[in-house]
Image 1: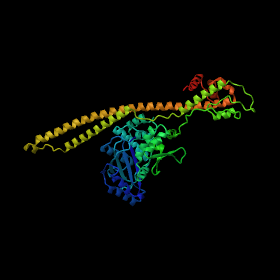
Image 2: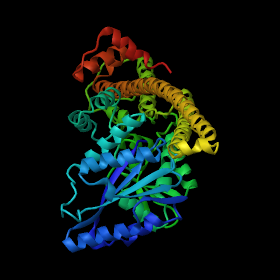
Image 3: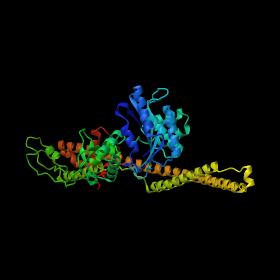
Image 4: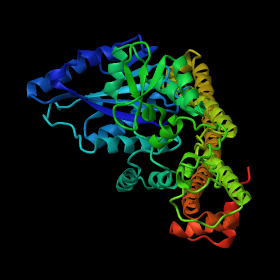
Length: 514
């Protein structure tokens, strides 16, 4: 999860009342505060756009940080947005909402910034070119400025170039070191319009997305995933688009979204999870019959009986002892079983380690203490600036000593608060470094596990290809079964166009061991 900065352009013909009702809505939010401007100012922005005949009336930004952020930091984000889109920050309406997020570790505060698309003085329209890239750039610059951990975005390469162009070399270097080698984040699970549409239908899309993510992370099979979603009133179905799975509300059948987008997983991973389980029933030997040829029996059985008599019309072939056929068939069946099971091995899901969770908890507490200390220092500074000064007439009435002691006490308290703030900043910085090291270690371990599974899948597919080729070879020349599995694997490898060293043949044959 990362700092989210999302911009929306409100059309003039769509009206502004729905947006104002959302900003004033106290049902979804615990607290609402207009930090700058009023709802009347938003109405004026809309009226100015209608008067000018502009297609859009209001630019609406949503600033939703994942880590804790206070109002002074929000003012810095506003200044960056104003600088990028070239408008005066003083004419923006800023609304603060507090509500519980769908993820437990995310901060409860988010802000709405609204600016008229048309400047009432100059008549110029706000910039909108490459706005998504700019939003991501402001988010990464804010994370660097506030000490939040970097998060990969969809436009990381372009953002790094933009930071360097703006002289933010340190932020660009930090982003490049930590995120350039990480895979890009998946596409967003839903858009703002979809979120509002589902809200009008009585569905909390962020909460449903979190339920799907938890069920997908915990589920190891299709049955487990279906059961977990069914308990939450959701159902998984095959979508109209081939190879796509969708999630619908069980009660009324309303579409929630695509399973892979809601789960934040790759489509291939979801397809592998939704594949039906492979039957593990014991392999039965087909009945022998003089009317069946060896090639027909090989197609119908995983462990064929090679001693079936040949059809009278076929030419005579060298006879081979039944023990050779049975042994080869048994070894091939064991190898095929093992390769099939290896092919069903699912990719591991990345989860934070206990050490990462502990450091995050410590970092959250340290950030809370740092915020409280900053607020206390700010209050002391305000009291000191407003404290009455010692003037000449204070000596005449005995008030000078009292005022001097008050000023001295505030100055000492300010020094103590400043030292405490510096100490907490060092502590937060140390925990952030430790968090970065632990997360890097956990991600490297996860990447190695993914590579192991990929190698296992590749080896299993190659073994299954060789087994199919061996069965074809034996159906054409049963005498080959007398030469053993190792020789058959080498011949099949050469016929498939790949060459393997003798040492690797031994490893391939060892795969038959359970």
